Length: 328
Image (cartoon, rainbow, N blue to C red; front, top):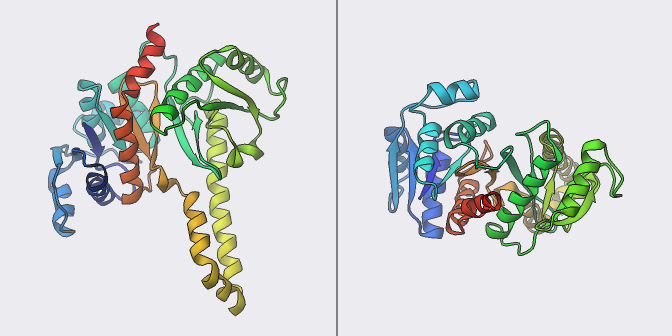
């Protein structure tokens, strides 16, 4: 079963409800929305949407961005996120899609579903819409301090995710670093490079500098959460900067406005390739339940695509495959 937290994110519950309807139309799967039932039904009625293959589980409380994450998970037992997390705890084959705050999602994963036995630290990913293909960045904020063993586990779990959810047969894993040479980096990154190099089940491609990330042939980039979060926020900031620059250029004068009219179809097509909406979300790996974290400002298209990832996660038994690594 796919559970959707209908009250996480900036556009709740509208984006989640509409995204679920789009997902049913595209994937023909049953979906359960978790949240305040009356408010969810209002969205269906207001927009004349079909509830075919969609059910609702009532959860009257909501965890907001103003709540202290771990405390809210413990106190707001009837919130949409906690109720949904308990549902995937009861049925380990199910998957939760949520756009809730990062802290709350991490806390629900650790405190409610728990860690997979053998996993040192759960890690939060981000799918980067790179020029050639999507790249999974892991970790992007869950673990500011890491050991080489943590990062090795990030690489192993991410490789399984990219293979079975994103369809990459033999994912190439790179280590984010300040240089491509093997001897580059601080003590942690030198040690991690050697550990990844010696791990047989990881297709390690070596170090990767920040300038190469968005035009890379690699499929996974691993690093500590402190570094990963800076990478992610820098890329997001550069994307916004590029949009502003293009807007300023095209609105300079009549000629530039005309050039926009002539090129907008091609430009919009290329820009769409770099939109995070194409993938919708990214996984929280290492917790004992399937969780796909959507961006807080996800619209219905992004949410539909996040649900698509969740369906592949469930159908390909990704959680069990990750568990099997540490059961050996």
